[in-house]
Length: 240
Image (cartoon, one colour):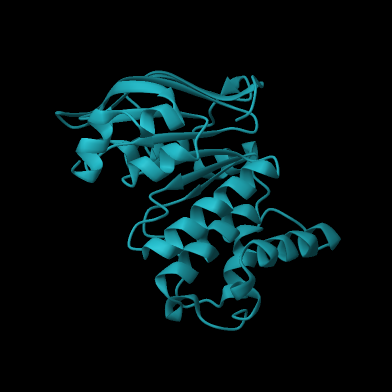
């Protein structure tokens, strides 16, 4: 695991309400440069709400979010310009567009120059199958291929912080393992990763640090591999 690095994201006492529902309750955490941090918890715990706040889509009712030492912008396009990219739950690709067109959309703020081409090649190195599917409509890809494309689309924006919301959802175990190894590779290439997952143990195993979210509150935090072996977490997520 990585040693101490500069913080790229700090969330302090975050609260989110949906009407009378207090979905996120006083959550605080941080993400450092070159680090993977996981937030794990059951469905409905509030994990995706946190990600939508960070993406600039949901407005919190209280607390503070800072990226690179500055307050988080209030609009999604400004968040992307700051260097954050969200891969949302269930991918949300432009299904009528081809693989190539989705990748171009991910780089909409950039010029089509040599750097753009190098980043395309990087995506094909991470996910070789995408290079074979360039002209195929994304809606016809398999679930695993769609997840590869969703991650690649985000990477085409050259983010410093990658937000992954349930990337293993609906994938076969072998694909999940491949995906987790790729997340490690993305981290090793200098991108900080915030990973939200129901697949708690595997997510924690690859994480520098982790947080357990239950009913909108953190109940545990610590080094990822240590949490992955916590008997309570094993029992809750593996039925052990």
